[in-house]
Every structure is written in structure tokens, then in C-alpha cells.
Length: 238
Image (cartoon, rainbow, N blue to C red; front, side, top):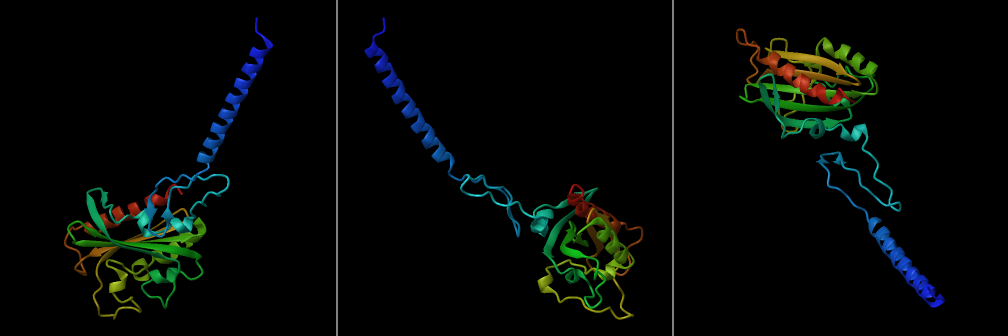
């Protein structure tokens, strides 16, 4: 038969065990309260992509906005070449900004005025054999209607409207005005396409700026198609 003293001893032991258990749980809770950060990708101009896991006392970081993600390195990494339908090219330069007039060949004639353009990303590509260069500019708008309107304005003469970027813009003077009437222009192939509220303008030309292509040569068409597809692909799911 269990005596009163034995019951008292069991209750005392149970109380001590509960006290120890509560102390362990409290210590674990304090440990969990320490902020733990996973290492994410660091994007130029966009910051770390992995969200921080925080305790209640530290608010979580805010997700990056569409504007923050709209940078050249995010969508067109310099380390990632284009390989599309036999076409191979490396990125030569990438830049971004908000005044869309900066993308124009003739800034005095702002064809994007009143279109609601919110920003741009411009990237240059050089074909693997260094014979063909391609410049692609992606323009961001508030909605699809604005992007399509801008596309209509640029489609007629987009090669003249959007500046061609094949080298670091800081090493060449900006293009202003129109070339002289007698100057031979380099042959180009341009493709203007809208995807959602983005507009892509892709132009290819020969690196030696020849005014006419070789007979039966489809190099510029192939380059423009490949780069244009690459430029539109990231925005299809947005």
C-alpha cells in the first residue's frame, strides 16, 4: 500500500521535472528567437533575393518591387551566353535607368513622350565569331495598352529611334541628330514586340558596319530572332 509520504515524494519529483522541462522549453524559445538568414543570390542593383526569417521582435524584410528587379544583370546575366537555334553570343554590356529618353538615338525627338514609359534595360550581344552585334532594349510600362501604343510608334523606324548599344556607353559619345543624307547606313534587322506591359526592341548589324549583307546571308535575321526571343522570355510569366 502507498503511504502518504510516498505520494508526497512522487508529487515533489513530478514538480521538479515539470520545472526543468519548462526551463528547457524557455531556453529553446530564446534560441529560436535569434534571426536566421539564408544566403541568397546577390543581384546588382536589386540586393539579396532570399527573404530573411525573423522573430516577432524583428519585422521581416519587404519583398523587392518590380522596379528593383528590372536590372540588366537580373534578366540578362553577363555570365550566361545565348544559345538559341544554333546562334551563340555573349553579352557585352548592360545598363538600366528610368528616363526612357536615354535610350533614344535622337534625344531631341522624343518619340516616347507621353507613352508612360517607366524605365528601360539595354543589353548588347556579340556573336561568338565576333561578326554580328545585337542591341536589345526592353521598355517597361504601367500596362499592356501603353506598351502596345509605344510599339506602334517605334515599329515604323525603330532602328533610328532606339540607340544601338554594342559597347560600353561610357566609352562612346551619345548619338544626336540624324546622319548626313549621303552617309551609307549599316544594314540592320529590327524586331519590335510587346509582351504584357513590356516592349522589346531588338536590332542586329554586322560588326564592320557594312551597308549591304552578303548574298543569301541570314545572319542578321537569325541573331535578331534569337536575342528577341531571349529578351521576351523572362516577362512571359509576369
